[in-house]
Structure formats: C-alpha cells, structure tokens
Length: 260
Image 1 (cartoon, one colour):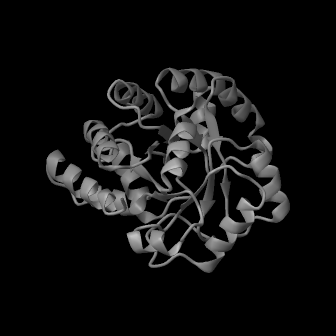
Image 2 (cartoon, helix red, strand yellow):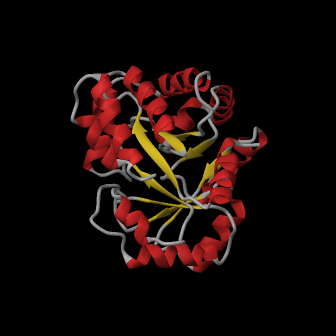
C-alpha cells in the first residue's frame, strides 16, 4: 500500500490531523535537507514534500522563491532531489512527495521520471502548474507504479471542477487556503473552510489545507475540518535563518513539534 494512504489511515485511526512539511531541496545544501527530513520524521511530521528548485516558481511567494534561487545557485537539479530521496528511503519510512513544476518533469521524460521517482521511494507528486485537463498521461503513469498525483483545488474552484478533480485524484486533495501564492498569513480565511466543506461533500479522500499555515492556533481553529495541514514558507524561513546544521534541525524540529 502507498505510504501516503497508510499515513492517513493511521491519522484517522488516532483521531489526529497530520502535518505535511515542505522543504526546498538544496537550501542551504542537500546534506542539510536530508538531515531535516529525518528530524521532521522524528518530531512528528506525517509527510515531507521535497521542493525541486525551479527558475519560475509561479505558485510560490518570496520566501520559497528565494530558497529556490539559493538551491539553484548550489547547482541542485531534479536528479539530485531523486538521489536524495533514494538515500532517505534507506533511513526512514515517512512518505516523501516531490513538489515540482511541470517543465522539469517534461524535460526529464514522463516515463523516465516516474520510473526513477518510484525507484527512489517517492510516494506522490505535486505539480501546481499542471491543469487537470492535461494531467492524464502523468497521472496514469504514476498510478501504474502505485504513486499518486496530488491535485490542487482553490476557493475559486467550481463545484463541477471539484467533482471532476476528485474523480481523478488519489492520495489526498491539496486544498489551497486562499488566492495568490504561498506565504505565511495571520489567519485562515472563511473561504478556506468553505472549500474544505465543498470538497468533503464530494469525496472521502483526505483533505490537506496549505498556503499560509504557520501556527497551531490556526490548525485548532479548523476544528474537525480537513485531515492535514501543509506548512511550507514558515519552515523555509526558519531554514533561512542559518547556522550550523544542528541548530537548523533543532529550530525546525522544535517548531514542528508545537503542532503535535
């Protein structure tokens, strides 16, 4: 069984929400990213997204854009991220997802990418700039090896589009909390809760809310709505503060532990 599915089953059995943590792979370097994944697993994260640095991260705000630029300056590529995932899979069973834009996957070759990602122990793929209408080939290739393409829905998604999306989806649905790009926000808008309710009415797939999540209080305010939260920019900001790897691990790990 896919590790994403197993993780959500365990969360539901325990009556808990999960924390999905995002890291920009290669910021400040790949070795530190690997150490942080292990720390996040130890501190209670349910899953980890490995963000592939990209020159035009259109869905990301300034914090993740800057992290992506730093990783690109370090020469980090999709190949490096897959290699890192393979090394991590020997050390942890935490579900690993790749977050990337479509261009690197297309340039890699869909079948070659899916094959290498599967061999590296990747469980799911998030591609924010890939429309539902153009996702069938990639989704089918992933399904053939037991991986999931994670689809995104936003507060502006129509009921018809939500229904069409959940029919194709697996793993979980990534519910975007607000319009715009990633980044820390002070509160969860009412439109995000409405989105969770609308999607839940059409599917039993787990729902994860992302974009702007940064505090345990925000998660508590959701009550029973949603199955997980996705935390990205707040973690990337803590990494950006720098220091020795041990210091970064403690800073990030301590922060994630507050959500338990």
